[in-house]
Amino acid sequence: MSTALLTDRYELTMLDAALQSGAADRPCVFEVYARELPPGRRYGVVAGLGRLIETLSAYRFDDDTLAWLDDTHVVSPDTLTWLASYRFRGELHAYREGELYIAGAPVLTVSASFAEGVLLETVVLSVLNHDSAIAAAAARVVSAAAGRGLLEFGSRRAQEEAAVAAARAAYLVGFDGTSNLAAGARYGVPTLGTTAHAFVLLHDDERSAFEAQVKAFGPETVLLVDTYDTAGGVELALEVAGSSLGGIRIDSGDLAAAARAARRQLDAAGATGTRIVVSGDLDEHRIAELADAPIDSYGVGTRLVTGSGAPTAGFVYKLVARAPAPGAPCVPVAKAGGRKATIGGRKAASRRLVGGRAAAEVLRAWQRRPAADERPLQVPVLVDGELLHDPDLAEIRAHHRAARAELPDHARDLQPGEPAWRTDEEVDT
Image 1 (cartoon, rainbow, N blue to C red):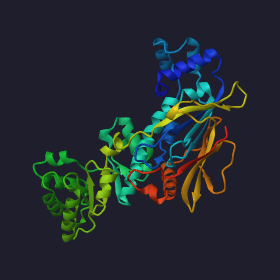
Image 2: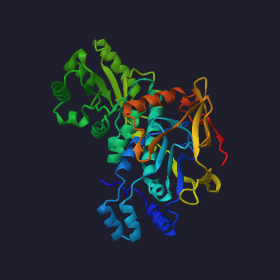
Image 3: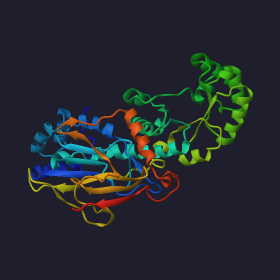
């Protein structure tokens, strides 16, 4: 299905006017960056590049799309003809998925004619802003969990396609799996889930519900024990499944106190290997508060996938260079005006490392090479129509772990503070 209408009208009206003015074929460079990090955040996480490549592969103006544009008089007939053969033939360079970034970092660079590049603005921002916001929030949850299990449970709190993207973004930064089956089918994210309170309430009593679940899935299943009384639920779960019970889930009440009491019950019954899973509007701060409780895994949903937990990454898509004519070299262009001012010129980005820890994001003119103590951050993704960078989720997860290992100690603090590292601009434009 075409993704060409996942855009704003003004992208097409700009194209229409540029084709008429003769400027549409001018070579241009667009950069995607965040003007600032969300309040309280020390770094961001790039996510969505793989999904963006999928979206661009279907960015075609098919007959139905062109007919609708014609019927609604969005663009002129000549522009409809141009759109009929549209293919993105430019270049994409980007930070890898899973990479960390700070404000001003050119996480995606689009080099193309104005006509080809301007059409991508909205869809690029739509994908990267959403997925990077989820990934940054999920990365903080991973830090707070300190190695304990993490399960993504946010599907019912998000738009259906956003839920799939959120599950992927959470997994790539370290979550262990998701409840969302579409994320499993499309991206290979491990899926998990047993029963909800409705299953317990369906049966005549809690025992009957537990017996039915154990019969279906074996004693290694995870039983939801807080429908009526948590302590009684744990006792009954042990009676039904025995000491080989796989796990219990607690979804309400004082989670720390309930987990401690449950651990005592389980251990006294010899169920020392039974895991305790908790859920219920958790975020990184709540999980940090539960650090001393005997909890094995956390189910995280609402506060991960909604705006309060995952504020927008704030990426913008800006023209930073253009050529006066096809075949001519690009020259820097910049917008004036306060916090929305831009820095002209195509920029290369690298990370200066001191003792293996990130110290600065170095931005310099594209043609300049990084210093020996810097790690280049951008990779070619699309060049001359060829896809050069398309890692699987296992590679992305590994890269994210390596990038997180470079965080300075203060950047791991969940409390508001300074960015993880500074920006050094060596851009002579």
